[in-house]
Length: 389
Image (cartoon, rainbow, N blue to C red; front, top):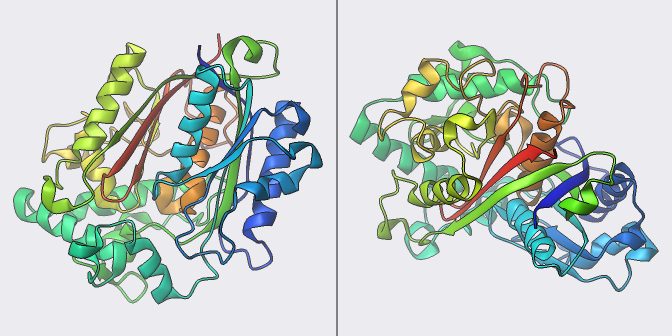
């Protein structure tokens, strides 16, 4: 049995002093149900993706979804967490409930509020998604971890600063057309490539434009089985999902390989009976530009060490052979951790039904790929989506 997305909602991502985790959850839950044309009473199960790790004083947040409507009372509600892949973990759990026949309608919500946390504390919270015995004292927090990865990549394959700047410029340009994006400004290649007062080095060879944003935001979607979806107003089928979890310590693996990413992509493509060349676009996890670069290789777009070719030859631009991050990615859209994976699924569903915002829509999109990653290629989730026939 295939699971289908039949409704969704998405807040803008950014800094919201007047919102709370609860208010963001309530808004997208109600909006997603309305978008699907169903009532809260129709929901069989609720899954909330919320990383938290100290960002919100309110923990134990699964039941906050019930605040959206009294009819949600007594529905099964579970919070899931898998670092920066928390949103996709929630979606995949909802898919499994549908496929197992345990639920007919699942409401999936992803949320995070990060901007109220002081800067140094943000760094400490994010670093908890790394292996603390090895990386707990890394200067620069999680940016420092990826700074070390970038440095190691440069040492092995040569300076890739041009490619990283091109990835940053691409995603910022794409983000201009995304009304949900936190940063809708086309900085251009020269700004992203050059060190400046506004674009200083943050960690290793990574500059500010190489790093995703600290964000608040939420997204939600409604899942049902494919038969029920045929009776709904719109539907996008989840053709395949795959999840590969790798070792947490980077010392136990070749961190330049992103092997879990490769395994997840291979499993999903095989399950769907398609190849990478069949994809119309991909939303991938560019928490840092070097992550997107290595993901080109891990997904099989280029051989190892040659990821720069994909961006330099224009393959990953919106009009290229495999557009990557037409939404602007985490780089421009923002990265409210628990919401990110749900957002990727919502925006991909919009693309596949021709409902993406003007300027963001990929022409004739038929099959979309999503890669959402937790930690440094530790939690690896791939989803393949297509319009319902």
